[in-house]
Image (cartoon, rainbow, N blue to C red; front, top):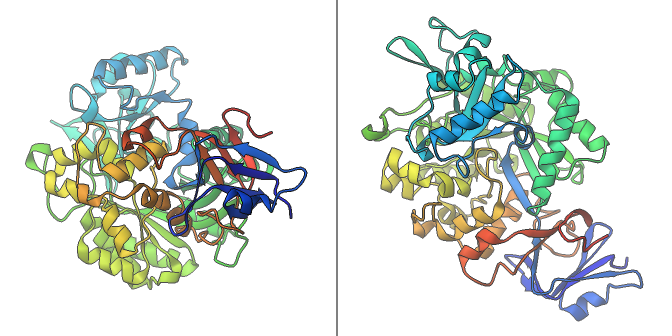
Length: 541
Protein backbone atom coordinates (compact mmCIF):
# COMPACT_ATOMS: atom_id res chain seq x y z
CA UNK A 1 0.00 0.00 0.00
CA UNK A 2 1.20 3.49 -0.88
CA UNK A 3 0.88 6.45 1.47
CA UNK A 4 -2.11 8.69 1.09
CA UNK A 5 -0.62 11.41 3.30
CA UNK A 6 2.89 12.20 4.51
CA UNK A 7 3.39 14.63 7.37
CA UNK A 8 6.88 16.12 7.51
CA UNK A 9 8.83 19.26 8.31
CA UNK A 10 8.35 19.25 12.06
CA UNK A 11 8.38 16.98 15.08
CA UNK A 12 6.50 13.68 14.99
CA UNK A 13 6.06 12.23 18.49
CA UNK A 14 5.90 8.47 18.03
CA UNK A 15 5.33 7.75 21.71
CA UNK A 16 7.22 7.69 25.00
CA UNK A 17 9.25 4.58 24.15
CA UNK A 18 10.26 5.45 20.57
CA UNK A 19 10.59 9.22 20.95
CA UNK A 20 10.51 11.64 18.05
CA UNK A 21 10.80 11.31 14.27
CA UNK A 22 10.94 13.55 11.21
CA UNK A 23 7.95 12.27 9.27
CA UNK A 24 5.05 9.85 9.24
CA UNK A 25 3.20 8.21 6.33
CA UNK A 26 -0.39 7.04 6.59
CA UNK A 27 -2.61 4.98 4.33
CA UNK A 28 -5.64 2.75 4.67
CA UNK A 29 -6.38 4.32 8.02
CA UNK A 30 -3.07 3.13 9.49
CA UNK A 31 0.44 4.37 10.09
CA UNK A 32 2.52 2.92 7.25
CA UNK A 33 5.95 4.28 8.10
CA UNK A 34 7.59 6.65 10.57
CA UNK A 35 11.16 7.81 10.88
CA UNK A 36 13.43 9.99 8.79
CA UNK A 37 11.92 11.72 5.78
CA UNK A 38 13.87 9.43 3.44
CA UNK A 39 12.52 6.38 5.27
CA UNK A 40 8.97 7.61 4.97
CA UNK A 41 9.27 8.70 1.34
CA UNK A 42 9.81 5.05 0.39
CA UNK A 43 6.10 4.56 1.12
CA UNK A 44 5.00 7.39 -1.19
CA UNK A 45 3.25 7.05 -4.51
CA UNK A 46 2.12 9.34 -7.31
CA UNK A 47 -1.06 10.35 -5.45
CA UNK A 48 0.51 10.93 -2.03
CA UNK A 49 -0.36 14.28 -0.46
CA UNK A 50 2.34 15.95 1.57
CA UNK A 51 1.59 18.20 4.51
CA UNK A 52 4.40 20.44 5.67
CA UNK A 53 4.26 20.76 9.44
CA UNK A 54 6.33 23.93 9.13
CA UNK A 55 7.88 23.46 12.55
CA UNK A 56 4.71 22.28 14.25
CA UNK A 57 4.37 18.83 15.83
CA UNK A 58 2.21 15.79 15.20
CA UNK A 59 1.30 13.55 18.12
CA UNK A 60 -1.04 10.59 18.62
CA UNK A 61 -4.54 12.04 18.91
CA UNK A 62 -5.75 12.67 22.45
CA UNK A 63 -8.01 10.14 24.18
CA UNK A 64 -10.52 11.64 26.64
CA UNK A 65 -10.80 8.81 29.17
CA UNK A 66 -13.52 10.29 31.38
CA UNK A 67 -16.09 12.84 30.31
CA UNK A 68 -19.81 13.19 29.71
CA UNK A 69 -19.99 13.89 26.00
CA UNK A 70 -23.78 14.06 25.65
CA UNK A 71 -23.99 16.35 28.67
CA UNK A 72 -21.38 18.64 27.12
CA UNK A 73 -23.43 18.83 23.93
CA UNK A 74 -26.71 19.46 25.74
CA UNK A 75 -24.98 22.08 27.88
CA UNK A 76 -24.17 24.15 24.83
CA UNK A 77 -27.81 25.30 24.82
CA UNK A 78 -28.05 25.82 28.60
CA UNK A 79 -27.08 28.92 30.60
CA UNK A 80 -23.29 28.98 30.87
CA UNK A 81 -22.25 29.63 34.46
CA UNK A 82 -18.66 28.38 34.30
CA UNK A 83 -16.19 30.08 36.58
CA UNK A 84 -14.02 31.27 33.68
CA UNK A 85 -16.79 33.74 32.87
CA UNK A 86 -18.95 33.95 35.98
CA UNK A 87 -17.00 35.29 38.95
CA UNK A 88 -19.68 37.27 40.75
CA UNK A 89 -23.13 36.51 42.10
CA UNK A 90 -24.55 39.45 40.16
CA UNK A 91 -23.25 38.03 36.88
CA UNK A 92 -24.73 34.62 37.68
CA UNK A 93 -28.13 36.06 38.52
CA UNK A 94 -28.09 38.29 35.44
CA UNK A 95 -27.46 35.26 33.23
CA UNK A 96 -30.36 33.43 34.87
CA UNK A 97 -32.58 36.48 34.42
CA UNK A 98 -31.60 36.71 30.74
CA UNK A 99 -32.25 32.98 30.31
CA UNK A 100 -35.72 33.39 31.76
CA UNK A 101 -36.42 36.41 29.55
CA UNK A 102 -35.56 34.31 26.50
CA UNK A 103 -37.91 31.52 27.65
CA UNK A 104 -41.65 31.18 27.86
CA UNK A 105 -43.36 31.55 31.22
CA UNK A 106 -43.17 28.24 33.05
CA UNK A 107 -40.32 26.89 30.92
CA UNK A 108 -37.34 25.47 32.79
CA UNK A 109 -34.14 27.53 32.94
CA UNK A 110 -31.14 25.28 33.49
CA UNK A 111 -27.61 26.52 34.16
CA UNK A 112 -24.42 24.55 34.60
CA UNK A 113 -20.90 25.11 35.84
CA UNK A 114 -20.93 27.67 38.66
CA UNK A 115 -18.30 27.34 41.38
CA UNK A 116 -19.37 28.89 44.66
CA UNK A 117 -15.73 29.07 45.74
CA UNK A 118 -14.95 31.25 42.72
CA UNK A 119 -17.85 33.65 43.24
CA UNK A 120 -17.21 36.97 44.94
CA UNK A 121 -19.60 36.01 47.76
CA UNK A 122 -17.85 32.64 48.32
CA UNK A 123 -21.17 30.81 48.73
CA UNK A 124 -23.95 29.19 46.74
CA UNK A 125 -26.81 31.32 45.41
CA UNK A 126 -29.93 31.14 47.59
CA UNK A 127 -33.41 30.04 46.68
CA UNK A 128 -34.64 33.60 47.24
CA UNK A 129 -32.07 35.05 44.86
CA UNK A 130 -33.06 32.59 42.12
CA UNK A 131 -36.75 33.32 42.75
CA UNK A 132 -36.11 37.04 42.27
CA UNK A 133 -34.11 36.47 39.08
CA UNK A 134 -36.75 34.25 37.47
CA UNK A 135 -40.09 34.47 39.33
CA UNK A 136 -42.08 32.86 36.51
CA UNK A 137 -39.80 29.94 35.63
CA UNK A 138 -38.46 26.84 37.36
CA UNK A 139 -34.70 27.32 37.74
CA UNK A 140 -32.10 24.62 38.36
CA UNK A 141 -28.41 25.46 38.45
CA UNK A 142 -25.79 22.74 38.85
CA UNK A 143 -22.43 23.29 40.49
CA UNK A 144 -19.40 22.55 38.30
CA UNK A 145 -18.81 19.19 40.04
CA UNK A 146 -22.23 17.92 38.98
CA UNK A 147 -22.93 16.60 42.48
CA UNK A 148 -25.14 19.40 43.76
CA UNK A 149 -27.24 22.29 42.62
CA UNK A 150 -29.69 24.94 43.72
CA UNK A 151 -33.35 25.05 42.70
CA UNK A 152 -35.75 27.93 43.00
CA UNK A 153 -39.21 27.58 44.52
CA UNK A 154 -40.90 26.82 41.20
CA UNK A 155 -38.42 24.05 40.46
CA UNK A 156 -38.92 22.50 43.90
CA UNK A 157 -42.70 22.52 43.37
CA UNK A 158 -42.33 20.95 39.94
CA UNK A 159 -40.15 18.22 41.45
CA UNK A 160 -42.58 17.61 44.30
CA UNK A 161 -40.03 18.61 46.93
CA UNK A 162 -41.59 20.14 50.02
CA UNK A 163 -40.75 20.71 53.65
CA UNK A 164 -41.71 17.16 54.58
CA UNK A 165 -40.13 15.35 51.61
CA UNK A 166 -37.99 12.48 52.93
CA UNK A 167 -34.31 12.74 52.10
CA UNK A 168 -33.34 9.91 49.73
CA UNK A 169 -30.61 7.48 50.74
CA UNK A 170 -27.23 8.87 49.70
CA UNK A 171 -28.66 12.32 49.05
CA UNK A 172 -29.25 15.66 50.74
CA UNK A 173 -32.23 18.03 50.65
CA UNK A 174 -30.80 20.93 52.61
CA UNK A 175 -32.91 22.67 55.22
CA UNK A 176 -31.93 25.49 57.55
CA UNK A 177 -34.20 26.64 60.35
CA UNK A 178 -36.82 24.24 59.05
CA UNK A 179 -36.85 25.94 55.64
CA UNK A 180 -35.72 24.56 52.28
CA UNK A 181 -32.62 26.35 50.99
CA UNK A 182 -32.97 25.00 47.44
CA UNK A 183 -29.68 23.07 47.77
CA UNK A 184 -30.03 19.49 46.49
CA UNK A 185 -27.10 17.07 46.62
CA UNK A 186 -26.10 13.65 45.31
CA UNK A 187 -28.88 11.07 44.85
CA UNK A 188 -31.55 13.59 45.86
CA UNK A 189 -30.83 15.31 42.53
CA UNK A 190 -32.76 12.48 40.86
CA UNK A 191 -35.96 14.16 42.10
CA UNK A 192 -35.10 17.18 39.97
CA UNK A 193 -33.94 15.08 37.04
CA UNK A 194 -37.25 13.28 36.61
CA UNK A 195 -39.08 16.62 36.64
CA UNK A 196 -36.93 18.19 33.93
CA UNK A 197 -38.14 18.01 30.33
CA UNK A 198 -36.42 15.11 28.58
CA UNK A 199 -34.56 15.93 25.33
CA UNK A 200 -35.81 14.05 22.30
CA UNK A 201 -33.57 11.79 20.23
CA UNK A 202 -33.00 14.28 17.42
CA UNK A 203 -31.84 16.90 19.92
CA UNK A 204 -29.47 14.40 21.50
CA UNK A 205 -27.98 13.42 18.13
CA UNK A 206 -27.32 17.10 17.44
CA UNK A 207 -25.75 17.44 20.90
CA UNK A 208 -23.47 14.41 20.43
CA UNK A 209 -22.27 15.75 17.09
CA UNK A 210 -21.73 19.27 18.44
CA UNK A 211 -19.73 18.04 21.43
CA UNK A 212 -17.74 15.71 19.21
CA UNK A 213 -16.82 18.56 16.91
CA UNK A 214 -15.62 20.60 19.89
CA UNK A 215 -13.40 17.69 20.92
CA UNK A 216 -12.11 17.18 17.38
CA UNK A 217 -11.12 20.85 17.27
CA UNK A 218 -8.85 20.17 20.25
CA UNK A 219 -7.15 17.06 18.88
CA UNK A 220 -9.33 14.25 20.28
CA UNK A 221 -10.07 11.17 18.17
CA UNK A 222 -11.29 8.97 21.06
CA UNK A 223 -13.49 9.66 24.07
CA UNK A 224 -15.62 8.09 26.77
CA UNK A 225 -19.17 8.98 27.79
CA UNK A 226 -19.22 8.11 31.45
CA UNK A 227 -22.86 7.81 32.52
CA UNK A 228 -25.04 7.03 29.52
CA UNK A 229 -28.71 6.89 30.40
CA UNK A 230 -28.97 9.41 33.22
CA UNK A 231 -30.64 12.10 31.14
CA UNK A 232 -33.01 10.28 28.79
CA UNK A 233 -32.91 6.62 29.76
CA UNK A 234 -32.46 4.02 26.98
CA UNK A 235 -33.15 6.70 24.36
CA UNK A 236 -29.55 7.85 24.82
CA UNK A 237 -28.32 4.53 23.46
CA UNK A 238 -30.57 4.97 20.45
CA UNK A 239 -29.28 8.53 19.95
CA UNK A 240 -25.69 7.31 19.81
CA UNK A 241 -26.60 4.56 17.37
CA UNK A 242 -28.41 7.09 15.15
CA UNK A 243 -25.49 9.51 15.33
CA UNK A 244 -23.17 6.74 14.14
CA UNK A 245 -25.56 5.61 11.39
CA UNK A 246 -25.82 9.18 10.11
CA UNK A 247 -22.05 9.55 9.94
CA UNK A 248 -22.06 12.29 12.56
CA UNK A 249 -20.11 10.58 15.35
CA UNK A 250 -16.65 12.14 15.52
CA UNK A 251 -14.78 10.11 18.13
CA UNK A 252 -14.24 6.42 18.78
CA UNK A 253 -16.37 5.99 21.89
CA UNK A 254 -15.99 3.78 24.96
CA UNK A 255 -19.48 3.82 26.47
CA UNK A 256 -20.14 3.54 30.20
CA UNK A 257 -23.71 2.79 31.21
CA UNK A 258 -25.34 4.36 34.27
CA UNK A 259 -25.47 1.62 36.88
CA UNK A 260 -26.96 3.22 39.97
CA UNK A 261 -30.52 2.03 40.65
CA UNK A 262 -31.67 5.25 38.96
CA UNK A 263 -29.67 4.28 35.86
CA UNK A 264 -30.36 2.01 32.90
CA UNK A 265 -27.98 -0.91 33.44
CA UNK A 266 -30.69 -3.42 34.31
CA UNK A 267 -32.95 -2.24 31.48
CA UNK A 268 -30.09 -2.43 28.98
CA UNK A 269 -29.22 -5.94 30.14
CA UNK A 270 -32.86 -7.05 29.87
CA UNK A 271 -32.97 -5.58 26.36
CA UNK A 272 -30.08 -7.82 25.34
CA UNK A 273 -27.08 -5.48 25.62
CA UNK A 274 -23.89 -7.30 26.54
CA UNK A 275 -20.45 -5.86 27.32
CA UNK A 276 -17.74 -5.52 24.70
CA UNK A 277 -14.84 -7.80 25.57
CA UNK A 278 -11.26 -8.22 24.33
CA UNK A 279 -11.40 -10.12 21.07
CA UNK A 280 -14.49 -8.28 19.84
CA UNK A 281 -14.26 -5.72 17.05
CA UNK A 282 -11.55 -3.29 18.13
CA UNK A 283 -12.38 -0.87 15.30
CA UNK A 284 -16.02 -0.40 16.31
CA UNK A 285 -16.86 3.27 16.77
CA UNK A 286 -19.20 2.46 19.65
CA UNK A 287 -18.07 -0.04 22.26
CA UNK A 288 -20.44 -0.54 25.19
CA UNK A 289 -18.04 -1.93 27.74
CA UNK A 290 -18.49 -0.61 31.27
CA UNK A 291 -20.87 0.25 34.09
CA UNK A 292 -20.62 3.29 36.34
CA UNK A 293 -21.69 3.45 39.98
CA UNK A 294 -21.21 6.41 42.33
CA UNK A 295 -19.61 5.86 45.73
CA UNK A 296 -19.36 9.47 46.91
CA UNK A 297 -19.47 13.09 45.76
CA UNK A 298 -16.90 15.85 45.25
CA UNK A 299 -14.11 17.28 47.41
CA UNK A 300 -14.91 20.81 46.28
CA UNK A 301 -18.55 20.36 47.29
CA UNK A 302 -17.70 18.70 50.65
CA UNK A 303 -19.44 15.44 49.68
CA UNK A 304 -16.44 13.23 48.83
CA UNK A 305 -16.21 10.62 51.61
CA UNK A 306 -13.08 10.78 53.79
CA UNK A 307 -11.77 9.03 56.89
CA UNK A 308 -10.57 12.35 58.30
CA UNK A 309 -13.00 15.29 58.33
CA UNK A 310 -12.92 18.40 56.24
CA UNK A 311 -11.52 21.47 58.00
CA UNK A 312 -13.90 23.00 60.50
CA UNK A 313 -13.52 26.34 58.72
CA UNK A 314 -14.95 24.69 55.59
CA UNK A 315 -17.87 23.12 57.40
CA UNK A 316 -16.42 19.91 58.78
CA UNK A 317 -17.95 16.49 58.31
CA UNK A 318 -16.59 13.52 56.41
CA UNK A 319 -18.70 13.68 53.25
CA UNK A 320 -21.44 11.48 51.84
CA UNK A 321 -21.44 7.82 50.90
CA UNK A 322 -23.82 7.25 48.00
CA UNK A 323 -24.75 3.77 49.24
CA UNK A 324 -24.33 1.64 52.34
CA UNK A 325 -21.43 -0.78 51.95
CA UNK A 326 -23.58 -3.90 51.49
CA UNK A 327 -25.59 -2.21 48.73
CA UNK A 328 -22.67 -0.97 46.66
CA UNK A 329 -20.78 -4.24 47.06
CA UNK A 330 -23.81 -6.13 45.75
CA UNK A 331 -23.96 -3.82 42.73
CA UNK A 332 -20.26 -4.27 42.01
CA UNK A 333 -20.51 -8.04 42.28
CA UNK A 334 -23.53 -8.17 39.95
CA UNK A 335 -21.94 -6.06 37.22
CA UNK A 336 -18.60 -7.85 37.56
CA UNK A 337 -20.31 -11.21 37.14
CA UNK A 338 -22.13 -9.92 34.05
CA UNK A 339 -18.74 -9.21 32.48
CA UNK A 340 -18.70 -5.41 32.56
CA UNK A 341 -15.65 -3.32 33.29
CA UNK A 342 -16.41 -1.50 36.57
CA UNK A 343 -15.84 2.27 36.26
CA UNK A 344 -16.68 3.42 39.77
CA UNK A 345 -16.70 7.02 40.98
CA UNK A 346 -14.75 7.41 44.23
CA UNK A 347 -12.82 10.55 45.24
CA UNK A 348 -12.26 10.47 48.99
CA UNK A 349 -10.10 7.81 50.64
CA UNK A 350 -13.05 6.31 52.56
CA UNK A 351 -15.05 5.92 49.35
CA UNK A 352 -12.02 4.45 47.56
CA UNK A 353 -11.69 1.91 50.38
CA UNK A 354 -15.36 0.96 50.11
CA UNK A 355 -15.04 0.47 46.34
CA UNK A 356 -11.70 -1.31 46.51
CA UNK A 357 -12.96 -3.89 49.00
CA UNK A 358 -16.01 -4.45 46.80
CA UNK A 359 -13.87 -5.01 43.70
CA UNK A 360 -11.57 -7.35 45.61
CA UNK A 361 -14.50 -9.38 46.91
CA UNK A 362 -16.03 -9.48 43.42
CA UNK A 363 -12.84 -11.09 42.09
CA UNK A 364 -11.08 -8.25 40.27
CA UNK A 365 -8.11 -9.46 38.19
CA UNK A 366 -5.71 -7.52 35.95
CA UNK A 367 -7.38 -8.78 32.76
CA UNK A 368 -10.66 -7.08 33.75
CA UNK A 369 -9.05 -3.63 34.08
CA UNK A 370 -11.64 -2.34 36.51
CA UNK A 371 -11.29 1.39 37.11
CA UNK A 372 -11.70 3.76 40.02
CA UNK A 373 -12.75 7.04 38.48
CA UNK A 374 -11.12 10.18 39.93
CA UNK A 375 -9.37 8.29 42.77
CA UNK A 376 -8.19 11.69 43.94
CA UNK A 377 -7.19 11.13 47.57
CA UNK A 378 -5.83 7.60 47.54
CA UNK A 379 -3.58 6.13 50.25
CA UNK A 380 -0.33 4.24 49.67
CA UNK A 381 -1.86 0.96 50.83
CA UNK A 382 -4.81 1.42 48.49
CA UNK A 383 -2.47 2.10 45.57
CA UNK A 384 -0.60 -1.15 46.25
CA UNK A 385 -3.81 -3.18 46.38
CA UNK A 386 -5.08 -1.58 43.18
CA UNK A 387 -1.83 -2.37 41.41
CA UNK A 388 -1.92 -6.01 42.48
CA UNK A 389 -5.43 -6.39 41.01
CA UNK A 390 -4.79 -4.30 37.89
CA UNK A 391 -7.40 -1.75 39.01
CA UNK A 392 -6.73 1.49 37.14
CA UNK A 393 -6.89 5.04 38.48
CA UNK A 394 -8.66 7.33 36.02
CA UNK A 395 -7.86 10.82 37.35
CA UNK A 396 -8.51 14.35 36.15
CA UNK A 397 -5.37 16.50 36.52
CA UNK A 398 -7.60 19.37 35.43
CA UNK A 399 -9.19 19.26 38.89
CA UNK A 400 -5.89 20.44 40.36
CA UNK A 401 -5.84 23.35 37.91
CA UNK A 402 -9.44 24.45 38.47
CA UNK A 403 -10.14 23.36 42.08
CA UNK A 404 -6.74 22.98 43.74
CA UNK A 405 -7.03 26.15 45.79
CA UNK A 406 -10.46 25.05 47.00
CA UNK A 407 -8.93 21.72 48.09
CA UNK A 408 -6.53 23.70 50.31
CA UNK A 409 -9.49 25.61 51.77
CA UNK A 410 -11.52 22.45 52.38
CA UNK A 411 -8.84 19.92 53.33
CA UNK A 412 -5.64 21.77 54.16
CA UNK A 413 -2.36 22.11 52.29
CA UNK A 414 -0.87 18.66 52.97
CA UNK A 415 -3.88 16.70 51.73
CA UNK A 416 -4.26 18.99 48.72
CA UNK A 417 -0.59 18.60 47.75
CA UNK A 418 -0.90 14.82 47.59
CA UNK A 419 -4.13 14.75 45.60
CA UNK A 420 -4.16 13.13 42.15
CA UNK A 421 -0.59 11.78 42.44
CA UNK A 422 0.30 11.45 38.76
CA UNK A 423 4.06 10.99 39.21
CA UNK A 424 3.59 8.33 41.86
CA UNK A 425 1.06 6.42 39.76
CA UNK A 426 3.24 6.73 36.69
CA UNK A 427 6.36 5.43 38.42
CA UNK A 428 4.44 2.57 40.01
CA UNK A 429 3.15 1.40 36.62
CA UNK A 430 -0.50 2.09 37.39
CA UNK A 431 -1.29 3.42 33.86
CA UNK A 432 -2.91 6.69 35.00
CA UNK A 433 -4.88 8.26 32.17
CA UNK A 434 -5.60 11.96 31.79
CA UNK A 435 -9.10 13.31 31.43
CA UNK A 436 -11.35 16.23 32.26
CA UNK A 437 -14.73 14.94 33.50
CA UNK A 438 -16.23 17.64 31.26
CA UNK A 439 -18.52 19.46 31.74
CA UNK A 440 -17.18 19.39 35.32
CA UNK A 441 -13.87 20.82 34.08
CA UNK A 442 -12.77 22.25 30.76
CA UNK A 443 -12.00 19.63 28.10
CA UNK A 444 -9.09 21.73 26.83
CA UNK A 445 -6.20 19.20 26.80
CA UNK A 446 -3.52 21.86 26.83
CA UNK A 447 -4.52 23.20 30.25
CA UNK A 448 -4.50 19.60 31.46
CA UNK A 449 -1.00 19.05 30.05
CA UNK A 450 0.13 22.29 31.70
CA UNK A 451 -1.14 21.08 35.06
CA UNK A 452 0.56 17.70 34.74
CA UNK A 453 3.96 19.25 34.07
CA UNK A 454 3.70 22.15 36.58
CA UNK A 455 1.15 21.11 39.24
CA UNK A 456 0.00 24.73 39.16
CA UNK A 457 -3.56 25.86 39.80
CA UNK A 458 -5.24 28.54 37.74
CA UNK A 459 -4.35 30.95 40.55
CA UNK A 460 -0.67 30.06 40.30
CA UNK A 461 -0.41 27.89 43.42
CA UNK A 462 2.02 24.97 43.05
CA UNK A 463 0.51 21.91 44.72
CA UNK A 464 2.80 18.93 45.16
CA UNK A 465 5.53 19.73 42.67
CA UNK A 466 6.97 16.28 43.35
CA UNK A 467 4.00 14.82 41.45
CA UNK A 468 4.80 16.65 38.17
CA UNK A 469 5.47 14.72 34.95
CA UNK A 470 7.62 15.49 31.95
CA UNK A 471 5.64 16.63 28.92
CA UNK A 472 6.36 13.38 27.11
CA UNK A 473 4.98 11.46 30.07
CA UNK A 474 1.92 13.71 30.23
CA UNK A 475 1.19 13.09 26.54
CA UNK A 476 1.61 9.35 27.21
CA UNK A 477 -1.10 9.59 29.89
CA UNK A 478 -3.41 11.39 27.46
CA UNK A 479 -2.85 8.87 24.66
CA UNK A 480 -1.51 5.40 25.48
CA UNK A 481 -2.90 5.22 29.00
CA UNK A 482 -6.29 6.44 27.86
CA UNK A 483 -6.28 3.70 25.23
CA UNK A 484 -5.14 1.15 27.82
CA UNK A 485 -8.09 2.00 30.06
CA UNK A 486 -10.40 0.89 27.22
CA UNK A 487 -8.43 -2.16 26.01
CA UNK A 488 -7.26 -0.28 22.90
CA UNK A 489 -3.53 0.22 23.45
CA UNK A 490 -2.73 -2.29 20.68
CA UNK A 491 -4.57 -0.18 18.12
CA UNK A 492 -3.98 3.44 19.07
CA UNK A 493 -2.01 5.76 21.32
CA UNK A 494 1.32 5.70 19.47
CA UNK A 495 2.41 6.47 15.91
CA UNK A 496 4.06 3.17 15.08
CA UNK A 497 3.54 1.18 11.84
CA UNK A 498 0.28 -0.72 11.94
CA UNK A 499 -1.37 1.55 14.51
CA UNK A 500 -4.51 3.52 13.72
CA UNK A 501 -3.72 6.84 12.05
CA UNK A 502 -5.29 8.87 14.85
CA UNK A 503 -3.15 12.00 14.75
CA UNK A 504 -3.34 15.56 16.07
CA UNK A 505 -1.29 18.27 14.37
CA UNK A 506 -0.76 21.03 16.92
CA UNK A 507 -0.21 24.74 16.35
CA UNK A 508 3.37 24.59 17.64
CA UNK A 509 6.02 22.16 18.75
CA UNK A 510 4.89 21.63 22.33
CA UNK A 511 8.20 19.96 23.20
CA UNK A 512 9.93 23.31 22.83
CA UNK A 513 9.39 26.43 24.92
CA UNK A 514 8.04 27.18 28.37
CA UNK A 515 5.13 25.27 29.93
CA UNK A 516 3.04 28.46 29.90
CA UNK A 517 2.98 28.28 26.11
CA UNK A 518 0.80 25.17 26.39
CA UNK A 519 -2.06 27.41 27.52
CA UNK A 520 -2.11 29.16 24.13
CA UNK A 521 -1.58 26.02 22.03
CA UNK A 522 -4.35 24.71 19.77
CA UNK A 523 -4.97 21.87 17.35
CA UNK A 524 -4.74 22.55 13.62
CA UNK A 525 -5.66 19.14 12.22
CA UNK A 526 -7.22 16.02 13.74
CA UNK A 527 -7.28 12.69 11.94
CA UNK A 528 -9.22 9.63 13.00
CA UNK A 529 -8.09 6.56 11.09
CA UNK A 530 -6.59 8.85 8.47
CA UNK A 531 -9.91 10.66 8.01
CA UNK A 532 -9.96 14.39 8.67
CA UNK A 533 -12.43 15.18 11.42
CA UNK A 534 -11.09 18.70 11.98
CA UNK A 535 -8.96 21.03 9.86
CA UNK A 536 -8.55 24.58 11.07
CA UNK A 537 -6.96 25.81 7.86
CA UNK A 538 -8.28 23.35 5.25
CA UNK A 539 -4.83 21.89 4.71
CA UNK A 540 -6.26 18.46 3.91
CA UNK A 541 -9.08 18.04 1.44
